[in-house]
Length: 196
Image (cartoon, rainbow, N blue to C red; front, side):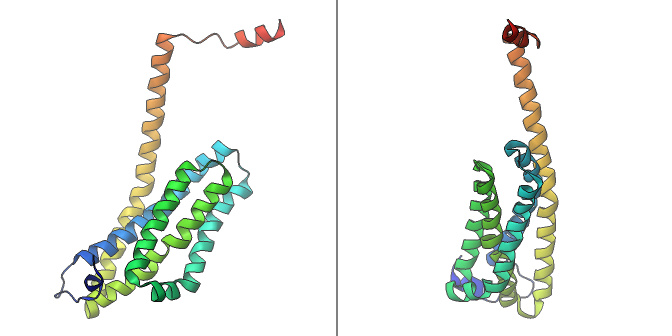
């Protein structure tokens, strides 16, 4: 996608590559934010976080979004729309990867902040690009963007739930195979050895 793709007006009702890019980028941003809500309870269990630390995750995302609301227009004007969209895609992708590999609560909170700060450029810049592309027919482009974002938002909890179910089912199968090969000792055996 070139800069000319972002400014060239399509024929009436046409969906260009730039239109689809904006729609999919908005959908992926909604997906990444919704997945965070499904992942944080598992992070709480893994890191034994307090409710205060858990609430910092959504607060970090919201703080990033607010900062984009205050300064996103300046960033888009200085960097250009194309670079801003790439920065948004890199931001929520990097935030998602950091959330997956976070070794401690501070890293997962930082991942949520990065997703909010850089990723929120997507919903800030894509409407402007769609308005430039579609002119008086921008309402139809906005409706398409909303439909795609809604579908991605619905897919996030469904796919994360499916992933959790498959992971637990796979872990159960692994445990059953392990028990067949080498039976586990009875539960009270370890306590009896410690007392002796």
